[in-house]
Amino acid sequence: MDIFTTPRLRIRQLTPTDGDYWFRINGDPEVMQFIRPVQKREDSDLFLLENILNYEIFPAYGRWIVEDRLNAAFIGMLMIRPLQGRPELELGYALEKGSWGKGYATELVKGALEYAVHQLKHPGIIALTDPGNKASQQVLLKCGFAYDQDMFVDGKLARLYKLS
Image (cartoon, rainbow, N blue to C red; front, side, top):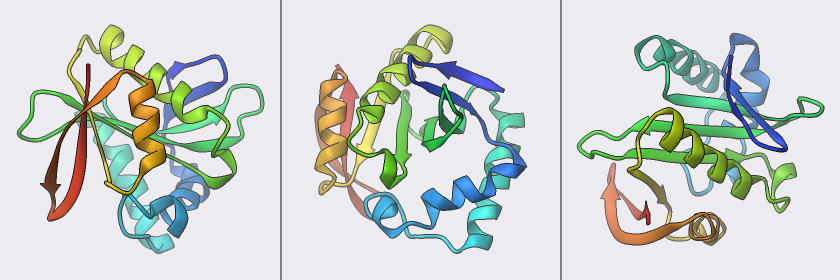
């Protein structure tokens, strides 16, 4: 099921056949450098199924596949979810290395904000980045986020950005 589209991107729900795509993100040390530990294939497959099952609980939220609209080529993943203990929604994304530097991240974040504000009717959006992830911080600033504070999340230092 499609979640939303942008001029170049299609964002859709995960399916059980997305294991190879999902692992291209979760199993790549460069992509995961600022996100979470790299997963083995079997852990990535389990994480995929957990995310698919979450659609039944939270159909409007979750992690989704990002594809090229023209040829369905895999580009990455997007996440929009409620963040425990906060009123805002959290936005996160990861692109495979071959999609870096092409403007996809900016287009994806702008599309995700449009979806969150207009479809979900939720204007409060935050994003967390590793302090070392300068590329992602630049994308967030370009898309209207502002740095708010550094904080610890799951024992790890994170930089919090809020939609301004």
